[in-house]
Length: 493
Image (cartoon, rainbow, N blue to C red; front, side):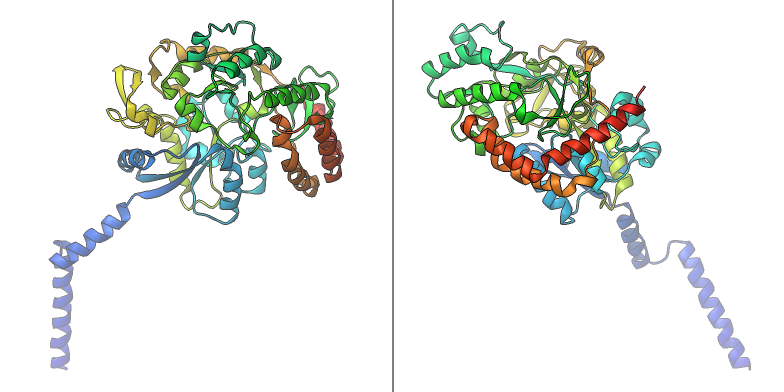
């Protein structure tokens, strides 16, 4: 009994000493273990960010600087993966379907279709995350973007705070305008380009007169139901009739003009298979292209390209669904770190230092500050040329040389002057015609790029395209679109 009592007393004393030692910090090995545990707990979360744009040489270098900042601010690091414009949609479809790890990804009405992929479940619904961790976004972003980018009443992406309307311009490489004293004041239509293209073709054999790629579509006075599919309503419609764009007189005229330009050598002969034109923009061996603009875009393009460009309007500023949804960052439905992803997007859209670091690179390496809010590109900027519109809040970015101090006021004015398109707010739901949409896309791929770029004779191939697309179910899709549009209009005030 006494032995058992003594043994019990010894055990009690040992346990007591152990408790005291633990309270005082324990042994060295215990401290090391605790330190390792704390280190693991504090280790930043790595976010994988898929973005659109030509992969850049210095992306990893810049993301290392981004990660230093975000690790301190919100406990995350960032790895960006870039996919070129022409390949983005197709490659992202494969990556998302295969379950490739990703947290944040670019989406738009025209690239990895925002509405369709939201409905397919590729993106996480963000309403609650925005309320909890995205208050800065909600305070900063023009409310029209969040409201206009809802899909069935829910937000699935964070729009870039930029221009609301879409306006295309004819953008000219100024060196050729100056060399041949060319006047662009009368340029507006596709046909009005012809005398200028002819001059360049006859005098500059190493220059591509009209720089486009396989994604080119002629400007037409129509509002597309789905971008790059041939269902549309006229911009000045009164009856909201959905038509097959391939059967319109406006398209037939544009295709004839493009065919004429192709045969004249104004367009690269390989255009139907060309997915991007970065090689030409780097060398400056081009004369005119047709990008979508924003206020003071000429200054931005000039700084980015490293040589002067000027532009003139090709269309009016119109607010389409696709312009409201023209650039968004979504959180993958498979993300393991949705809270951290939203915290990063919130910081990206509210923190000027982070926004400009991602946009322009490292100060002193890729650019230098020449004023409180003005930056000048350095030679190294050619190794880090990001698509600014695809990243986040444009109104946080530094001004470039030549930008007016009230640049962002100009954006707000531009947004206020935009004219709403007839289909603004209407999002077609293709669930009842999914087999037809799939067949339509497959059939379209055979004809679309060759026809739109002038690579084939429209007199021969347009009737074939119409026949094939109708066989794929285009008429049924138009009928379903008309039904949904009529129902939607009945709910509008």
